[in-house]
Length: 338
Image 1 (cartoon, rainbow, N blue to C red):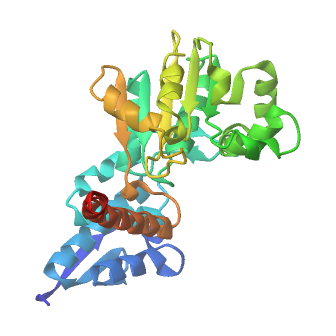
Image 2: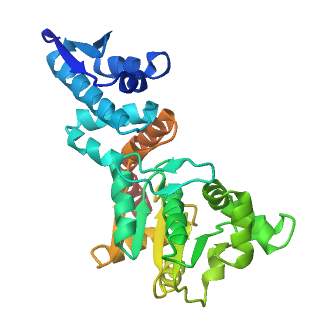
Image 3: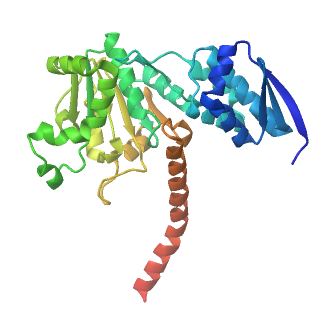
């Protein structure tokens, strides 16, 4: 263990200090535990005691949190974890990017903002490009932020319609057992999109716009044969499209429209003989002008801390399997020859 030193961080306002400490000092405890330091409060000063390298990281984390608090940003567990990660990777200069503009205001008056640098880049890509592919694990806000951007564009009248779609992978026999007409059968697949829209607009307003045809939530098959002008179109769960479906969807693009495609290439539910349309699109469209491909990572997860751990664990397991595969294939070929 290195030499113990003491550093001081000054908070200009007590309110900012209260926000940084959190309920029962939970945020400070998280910093102490993650960086193996001790943080002592003296008035508006915070004294950090620990190993020189860790004390320096703790100071930079606290300064970042105080800066966010001073700009009215809420300080929660996810925000603290993310800031510690940024500082540990030497990327704390990016903290200022976390105080950007509000994307959308929900029906209950809650501002929707990008919470990580990856999400900031994603929102910037959506605003600058006609087509954006948001690829990343569960909990990175891909769909929710895309819906927020769509609602914002609709409210600003830059588009006349919002169209949300996703493939119903089990559109065969399993759907057949569900009660009701076709719309009732596919609604369970579209539920996450409905939930996001209810949150942004409120159930009553959403229903009003849906009846007028200003908002459409439909399975991907409904898109065939149409040209979609002046629309904000979101294709969710795109990893479960086939190559043909993805091409069909992309060619629906009309004048004055914007497309956002979201998906997670680690959660493909297609049969083994089918190529994921999302994987194929990433390969084919890389470098095409006015098309952005945003890759979100476990660092951008804004759900429970455990979600991040689960994603990391699965990634490690997947890498181990990839290493084992060639040897297994070789043994199989050897046996067939003999």
